[in-house]
Length: 379
Image (cartoon, rainbow, N blue to C red):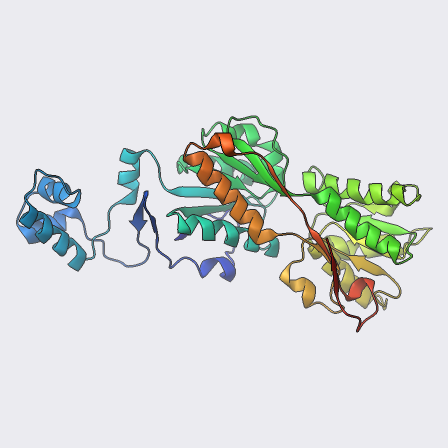
């Protein structure tokens, strides 16, 4: 089961399709979703003609209750659709079998694939997720963190880079494992670790690809200020230029937000540059898609007039026209690794846990090459 506590207006269908699941495992109570009638111990006691305490002991397989009575009460519980109160039992057991996940926005296709990886591993081990979206707004970021603490989650996975950077200490105060996705762990808490893609390496791959195509003037539409992936991708872009003997020009870097509007707004600035670029490396695919839309509206032909590369390889990258060259992040694996790390920490295996860095790969499509050519990949 995937619970939703979203600090946003709309929950996307890609997430909602999971609400009907049951989540259970060897260490966690089965939780039931849906339905208007809940069977209680009192109902079973009334049907069996015994006391509440007898039903409670029977369902716990207490030796104080004889075998025949236990079997009868278990049969009644099954027939009446009884499901244990997971909240009450968690107070006794000391854990809730839930993991909090903080994303920047539920509208981001990148987050959807990461959460799918988290949820698949969580489900296999009997854990449910509580999802919160921060929307890069300070008040909502704090609200998301405090909400997860109040829910007594067993671990927190943060895909929102800004939350990971600004609120590590607050997250650490919850006393549970904290896993940061695509953000550097500052180790402010005992069990704070990170799983990330090597953003600098990926940016170098994208920029080197553009350089290899003969582009000498390559601009960069950056990501949100204060986000470690944004800083790392800028560093990779800059390093690739320097190694090619091209001086870094800060005027060729345009501030962005990581959203399509940033790409649309960047095009007029690119066209107004005195030394107009022939190629652009965008912080992410959403930015690149916005730039492609603006380029088409301006009558530019991509890649003849302007080559474009993104980062993430979201599903839309193959469907835009022309299809988008990008750096593919192992999004599903990021989610799996983060949840696996959380499970290790929750079961006391902290000694075997360390920060994980995964590699992206270059996926060459039409926005940087001649249409009709075969697609290529480079690690």
